[in-house]
Each structure stands twice: as structure tokens, then as C-alpha cells.
Length: 122
Picture 1 (cartoon, rainbow, N blue to C red):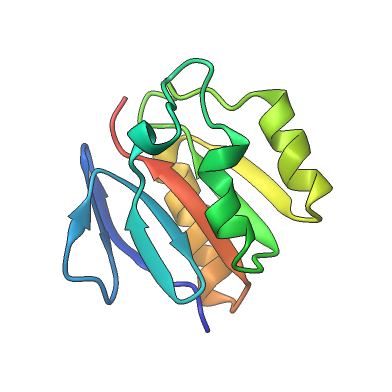
Picture 2: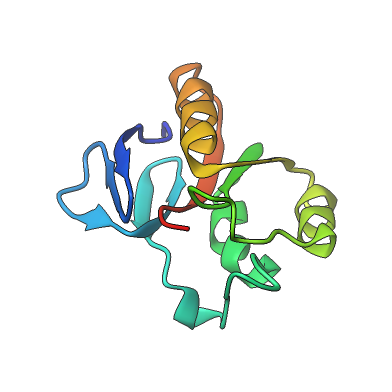
């Protein structure tokens, strides 16, 4: 299964190719995507992305995980979360969301087993 292309990104709005709904924040992986609901894990801008936010994607067998920190990079990514991903044998890349989407789409177009979490506002 290939990782779906992120078809569009604007403030508060993301579309994933092959998905009829749009997302504010989203998770993507080879073969799928869904809304990233921070309430599921109690995530907030600080302390930021938690391992629990990423487990679902890591279980999909990704080799690379891309994290989008928001348009103004307000979403934090603690070193402990990065360490957790690396301990799973997965390469992790963290960028401002527009750059993260570009990186993710480049990797997906190359056929990489890539997943991501993206915050589309602040």
C-alpha cells in the first residue's frame, strides 16, 4: 500500500487524496488517513506531540514519520517523543507544517513507507 498524497493545505484545512472528507489536523499512513483529534490523548501545543499520538501510525509499519508543527510552529515536539519514535526503528522528521507536507509528499511519491501527523493552524 502506498502513502496517500496530501492534496491541499491551508489554514485549518487539509485534504488527502482519495478521502472525501477534509481535516483540520490529520494522521496519514500507507493506505489511509483520519482526523487527528488531540482530545484522544490530551495533547496540547505544550508539552506537544506525545508517543500516544503516534502509536497508530507506527503500527502501520512506516519507515519514516513526518511531524508538522503548525503554520507558526506552535506545536511542540518533546525530545522524549522523538526518542520514542527512533526506538521503534523509525526515522523522524519535524518541520513547519507547509514544509512537512512537502517532505511527506516527496517521500510518498518516491514510494517510501511514510506516515505523518500534521497540525494545520498555529
